[in-house]
Amino acid sequence: MRPLTDTLILGSFVNASQRERQNLTLPADLGELAWDKIDYLGWHDRKTPNLGLVVAEVDGAPVGILLRQTDSKIRSRPQCTWCEDIYIPNDVTFYSVKRSGQAGRNGNTVGTLVCANFECSSNVRKLPPVAYLGFDVEAARLQRIASLQERVANFVRDIRDGV
Image (cartoon, rainbow, N blue to C red):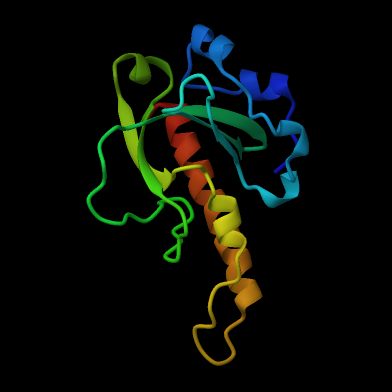
């Protein structure tokens, strides 16, 4: 992912009101991020812990979305729909996401299961176990990274377009 500035991040949110944008807090470690090792920027707002924020590169530009963490507990161990890691070491949370534009103002939302603290980028960068003799683990890792980028971009695009 390309490095982003505070202004680019705050101006990228497509499903947030002007007031919501003004009240957002940026990640504390923004200046220390290894941008080449993340596929999207995800964090929780320090003032509102159940509010998740994600900025992804979609069609060459940063697009941000607000995600609201639900209070309900999931009964079984879910799989993240973004990284699809079956050996996931972290929790997965259900988030509801308001669509942008008129659809969002009408209450149209989408739900998704995502790593609770947005660890997807580190999950897909781990080498997978060898599946069979001659299995190319590096190619599999690169495919997982590309798949994560595609799934996140498609989800964010769906929210942005308010379909």
